[in-house]
View 1 (tube, rainbow, N blue to C red):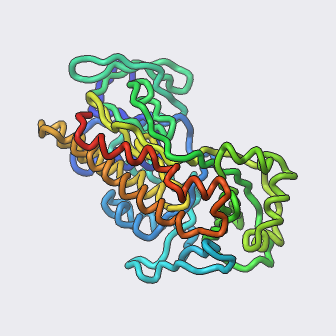
View 2: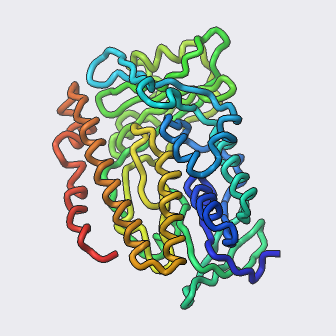
View 3: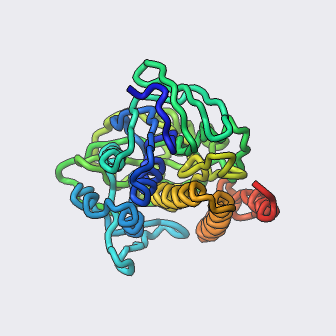
Length: 384
């Protein structure tokens, strides 16, 4: 069915960044042939569930805001944080035009965006992966495994939306800059019927990291201990004993778990801030986590995926129109946006001064974490 077909744009990855790219392309140029190659089938659990109010602007740009609101994801009205002191303070959304965010059912949200992209004309291949590709003068020849069957395709342009592993950029030998070693250890719980309906995200700092917890649909709760990979072994966070010992030393996070039942064993995932040295190449660009990842403390991961997908699509549309420098403009925007993010990140971590001699905070408050950031300023004038 798909063998030897020609596509204008082939997107590697069907998460929010990839589907946002497809939606934007087809909204502005419906005649384009766009394919999304997704390794899963939107049934796998994905960490990353917070959507702040400003993300609604991106969904409006994609033309799916009203449909999203009809999904009735769990609302949240802000964050409570013990950061800089033992006391909780609230950071509410009351000063934003849309005064609520959402705790997402990620499987349902990602599937929703993929279905919207299909409705607009995108071809979606689930349970599939790109095996290899060859560059041609006007695009790429690709070999794809689709539901265990090999197919060959052609594409004029490729988009790397494959997540932090950056499948395409890696094969194009584009280096990454990693700014820290943050990793998350998380567990999922069922909430007891007598537990209050607390929809706030909770953040609580500890001597070598911070706790994160948030409500999920179906009376579930995610709890994550964030620290650096080289410090995690000290606390044995990959064991029940280590997890419980650290949890009992918390105050606010522990109190949130007084009537819960563990759903499954602990999971670990990389959460380091990193970006590609360049996010573009010959007839390709990277979006979302493939291009740059953000600290989960920012709660901007999904919003960043949507925004980079939108702006990446604009760059591709201009490229197809023959506008010179369109890809370079996108790459420059990505670099400058990431510089702003790093400055904000450094400022926020500097507000926690209770453990200045502990390795986690010392690295972030003495400038050690940001040595690579200083080098980034030299790349502004470099040709991608």
